[in-house]
Image 1 (cartoon, one colour):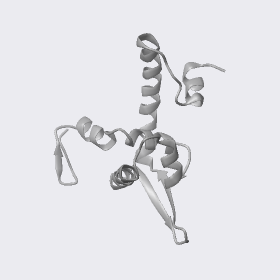
Image 2 (tube, rainbow, N blue to C red):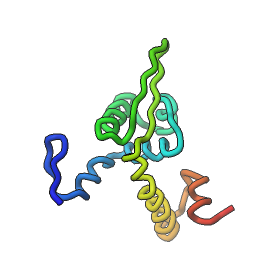
Image 3 (cartoon, helix red, strand yellow):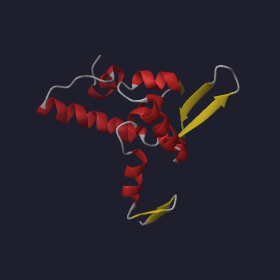
Length: 127
């Protein structure tokens, strides 16, 4: 299926989907927002190595593509919260499968270093 979105044509829905989540940080941000609303500073603490400029740009992009929402509170200092949308939540089962795949393949070709203990237990049936 050929798609047109935001003034750009996509050869198929797969290329469209990849563009929505491509990049180093988008998937991680969606992953951290899967179960809770987070403030800007909380997201930044979870993403070691991201610059303020890159985080702001990535959050704007995710919001533009309706994968997250941004709520600004009229207080001083400013308070901004980010929440995953239903479109974003639709990606979480895919990310969970990627976690399983990464653990399986990673344990065969290298050493698995856990990034999310809760998900590891859930998907590798460990207690």
